[in-house]
Image (cartoon, rainbow, N blue to C red; front, side, top):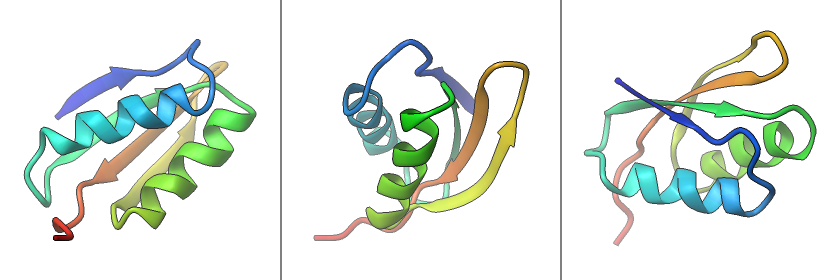
Length: 76
């Protein structure tokens, strides 16, 4: 499982980078994103879920959040 550090990136750049990373995966694969508190942790999980991906875990670490996402099925 890969870990992608999106800390220090503002919205919507962090979402765009997360979306691009998910495009490289096959449906069912899992990836972890590291997110800052505030707007990123509110918006990125919600937006990825709206795109059809599954939120597996959102865990607070020391000063940031760890988001595990399972890639959803491709929508033609």
